[in-house]
Image 1 (cartoon, rainbow, N blue to C red):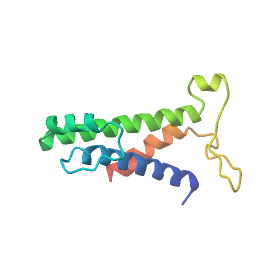
Image 2: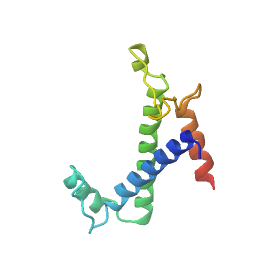
Image 3: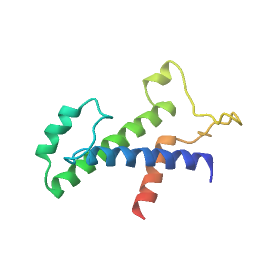
Image 4: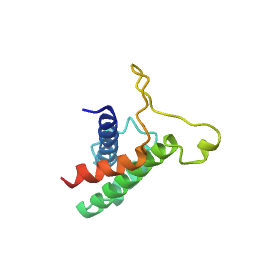
Length: 119
């Protein structure tokens, strides 16, 4: 599998993991040792009770996490104010080869999600 494809797949896996973790944390028996917002999760646990409410929360969390990853990739692609100061890149350590290669990672990430999540 192409390295860029592996990156996109891993970013999707991160998005899916944290979306699931956010929703699973609303379970009354969930262990919130990982969170610094345990009290806030306890409040949400009492508010989001129906399957419809949990699905809405899942969709919102997914969208927020996807947006954060997209913004991070826009930054790497040189599409935000950081580019006025300096440019950053994702580089394969072994080959020193850029994973960008004249492409927009943020656009490829969204395209990847559209392709993979439609299946």
